[in-house]
Image (cartoon, rainbow, N blue to C red; front, side, top):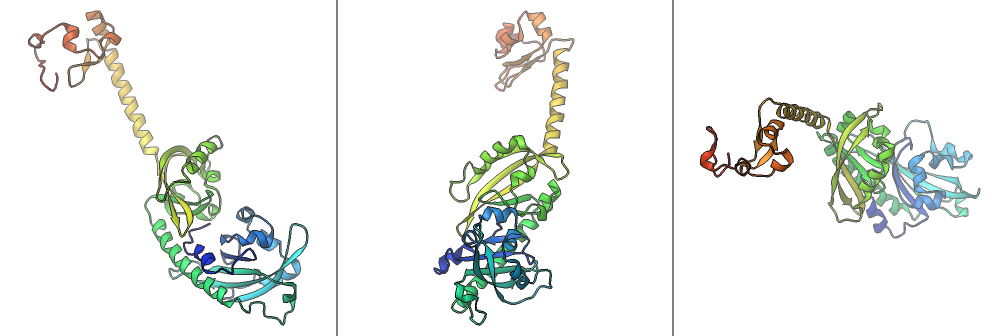
Length: 350
């Protein structure tokens, strides 16, 4: 589900909304449901998870003779519309429903969205002369107001995410992608249309790391608001099949009672290259130190030996593992005034 900060207020504001009512928000073609209330499960007889995976199940369950009332494939009609239809239940029976839909326009110029509320109707409501919406207008009016407010809040948040210079992904409580900004698309190649409503784990996490990612994502799900999740590094899957080293950092937050997780994606490629270059330089320096033709010793700021090459072992007869950690003056059995020319011992060391 997307960020819909006002929708949870509907249920508390309308005590009349129960298991026989469902309210939803979708794109204009109903090919992607942005929000669906729990009443869907009772009215359609199938779990919400199925709608996540296959949005077409909303229409597929409708009696074929009633599909024409939805105007599928026709030009979008603005304003409110209402219709009756029958929905097939898992046992083969049909349930009579009434739906009122209305088009929602964002003040920020985003794509219009279709909102709706569905009521279960008694069999007598099948009489076309009876206005089944009578007595329910106040519910539709309040839903329309709250949906419009939700879209405004939603688009404000989207503006922040869309223009962020950091790759940001927002997940719902179950780990499904709600928001996927342009920087995340640039980094991983996935367009938001291919990510919304899908589990983040299925998009970017290699199979062998699924459990590790799941444990990280849900380890602190019971923590308080604004809880920050510890970073996680993994080789994420790019849309082209390659791997991108990422550091994932996250935080949990709640909007009007709905929990979400914000995930930042940091590309670690440059850091890994820099670490590799540094490692190679250190290895080269170590080889020069180990195989130098002269005795060399490395001291810390107190004059304590931290490295001792093979020529020191030959000259002083002391293996490196016995010399490291010892004060150089003790190993050489010298006093400060007996140091070779050019070396002086001070409070800061040699």
